[in-house]
Amino acid sequence: MRFTVIHCFKRLLFLGVMLAFSAVCSKAETLELHNALIYATVDGKTTEQSSSLPYHWDRHHPGLAGVATFHLSFALSSVPAIPYGLYIPRLGNAYEVWLNGALIQRNGDMNRAGGADFAKSPRHIVITPMLLGLQNVLHIVVRADVGRRAGLAPMVLGPYEETYPLYLSDYRTRSTGTFGVVLLSCLIGLIAMALWMTQVERIFYTTHLQHTVRDRLYLFAGIAELCWTIRVCDAILETPPLVWPWWGVVTVLSLAAWVASMMLFCVELANWSHLPAAAWLRRWLWLEVTGTAAAASIALVFGYPLVLTVAYATLGVTTLVFLAFYIWKAVHGGLFLHKIVAGTLLLNTMVGLRDWYMFRVSEAFGGNTWMRYSSILFALTLGYVVILRFRDASGHARDLLVTLENRVAEKESELKATYDHVEKMAREQERGFERSRILRDMHDGVGSHISVAMRQLQSGKATDGQVLQTLRESLDHLKLSIDAMNMPPGDITALLANMRYRLEPRLKAAEIQLQWSVDLIEPTQRLDNNAMRQLQFMVYEALSNVLQHAKANSVRIELSQVPQGIRLRIVDDGCGFDVSTAPHKGLSALRERATAVGGTVSIHSAPGNTVLEILLA
Image 1: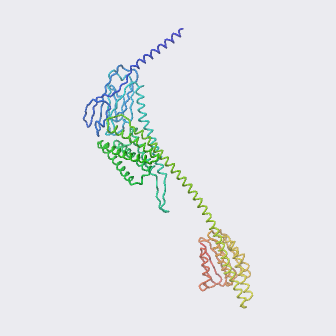
Image 2 (image 1 turned 90 degrees about the vertical axis):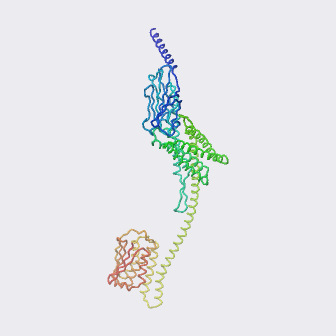
Image 3 (image 1 turned 180 degrees about the vertical axis):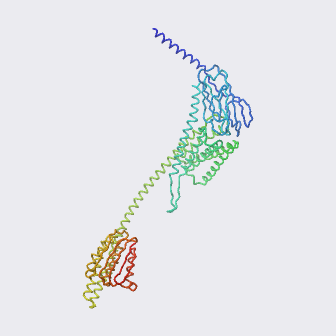
């Protein structure tokens, strides 16, 4: 029973606390703070005015830098017991926020111009209940740079649960969404630039003269998206990579280059690049981009913002004129893809004109640019066009490759047939050459000796031994000609061994001792069949001279490898002869044959020692 009473008491106590908390929460107030007493300090002079927020510094002090101090008084019906929040859509560039004499937030250096810009993102400040009273004073100090959209937007003060969702929604739209736009634009730009760098077509004028061609559609798409990436990055970079105002000049230049690249992209898409008007458009856009960059320098560095406004207006007019012409062409005979691009251009141009009015003409402050998000549609369209162009180019390349493969196959078939025909003709020609060689050898060797034998018999003056000798030489020529048909190319050792087999019996019959000093030498690749025959006849000629004229007792054949090449020597101990008076025809024939095989021949003769040396390099 006691436990039940205690339990009921606890439940009643908890219910009372919850009712009290609800009562307190019901008294919580949400206020919009927009009335302020403003002290603006420029060049050491301070002016005072009472105004309603928003306060746009560039509209009140164009081309000037300074400090603005805002005093905002507000009253609460009761002292809150729960945490409050202060949601500020935009303030800065650098700022301090004081509440009832207490500093509740500070960002940036209040004494150094051109540093970080904290007006890019919305702010939410948590306020503890002890800082609030019935009467309160909010004191905000803002440092403003030239042309940097400094100032203060209307604020919302209220319970944390009510102000934080407002801040979070604004932050997601302005910061998180911008980050997504940056990633998308950067990705499409890098893909387009990679395609421009890698998709190369080479036009050959001659064998050594060629011209490299890249698709400029990829180039302008890549430049447009990368420039837009730089432009949009400015909305989330509180600390820019360059000091202000030069970073501002870079962002303005990026915007102008983005607009110009979009138009040039459309020119390439419509295949207008060869027209004279396209050349004039390129010159005008180049002038527009450089002029806009110069206008940004004049506006931000020297403090004449109207110049930049006029430059933006000129760029907008150029875009409108081009857009009107492009839409008219797209509607009258353009492809469906051209119509899509024209629609996205129209949307972006209208949004761009709206942003130009809002941020360069009107007094609005704290709003968000729409073009940052409308550009997503153009980026997606641009990426779609790039992918389609790449797909078409790849398909065309595949078709060309298939055609090339078919043509290569046809040429290979034709070349094979031609090669077979040439090979057949070469074999027939080789057989003809071989027949001619055999006939020539038979005529010059065997035929010549038989003719000599016939004349010897007809004369009746030659002895049987002389006729027999002539017939033996004829037979040796015939055997050597037959051996030459199956002689291994380049194998000089085998050639000499074969000649030893054929001629050693004749040397013995003539009582001439054959001495053999032949090294085993690897075959020489450059000595073909013809060269081997030339070498064979040179050796045969030398040995025949020894048999017929030398009256020698011995003959030595030497073959060795020397630094100069392969050396072949035939040495006999015969009577010798005077080289200078020797028959010129025989020595000339030897030298011609040596030259034909890439070698040299030298002869040294004296009684008892005659040397014929053949050196093959």
